[in-house]
Image 1 (cartoon, one colour):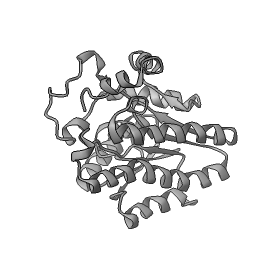
Image 2 (image 1 turned 90 degrees about the horizontal axis):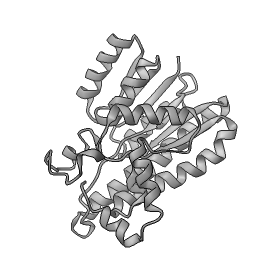
Image 3 (image 1 turned 45 degrees about the vertical axis):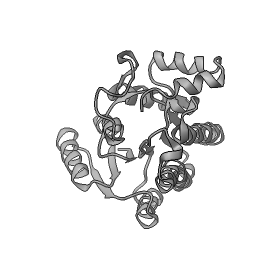
Image 4 (image 1 turned 90 degrees about the vertical axis):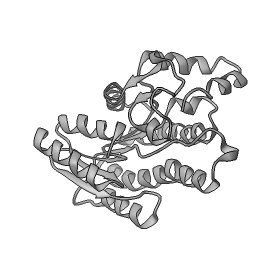
Length: 253
């Protein structure tokens, strides 16, 4: 059976990736800071799908803990076939008011950690001539939206390049760009439910996001934008003036 390593697997999209990949028969390595949440999810998936589930507790912005995950990715005796770089969080849009150390950790998690884990995964995948990497970005990558849009823009740009470079060698890299998705992301960002300021038609279901992104990754796409609604909105961002796009980016979290 293939093995998938998923970061940020304790909740939200990460947990949904774990559920859907386990249902397809993949063994899992679940990575997050919350041991209790990981163990609970692991027990559910072992019972439901009869797959092997390994729990790896790590705070990815701490070098020694991140290195444990890098070592797992490079362990040739237990190959990882799929890497899902999902760990992430948002900050308030008022950059000038945010603590700069919070901003630095935000940048590190979304950019440096993604880069380091990809680097660790690529070498054994390329040696085997197969593998898939999914980097969870956001439609914010296409819209000026403080530092969140900036880090997600990096993820999309790097994934595009990496897919072109490595797909001919059997390893695909896909940037997943969901819009507003029903998870606990907004709650963790400190915004009470119902106060996101986002129209109901703009919300996606986590199951849909994961299904469509896994399908796009299997097809070798460099960028996956789940739902026709967001595909249209992303296309529209290429036509509107930057000032208007920036104003639109101020909506919601």
